[in-house]
Length: 137
Image (tube, rainbow, N blue to C red):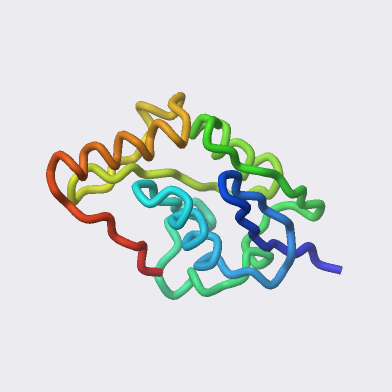
């Protein structure tokens, strides 16, 4: 049987349960609902997934036979989240932070927590008076 991935959201932590029938779009939307000033980007074969492939199931891009579920908590560092995706699923991701009308890769601040990154994105948007945008996938 192929592992599955689903997402449940109980207030704060985003908990990922592995199931084959979840689409990359669903994962991205759930992440954006929890962290509206952050963007999760999934890579497949080293390249950013196109809009067309966002509709694929995660089991189609998982690089491991045994996939482990894990929780993403607000106090986790961006680098920890990226590592967890790779170590537990074999999926490469990046997390971007909203800064006005631009998305910045958080590589220079990847030791900051998701909560801090999201808060900074909110502060920048409030300062620039830019409304948060739902990610369209």
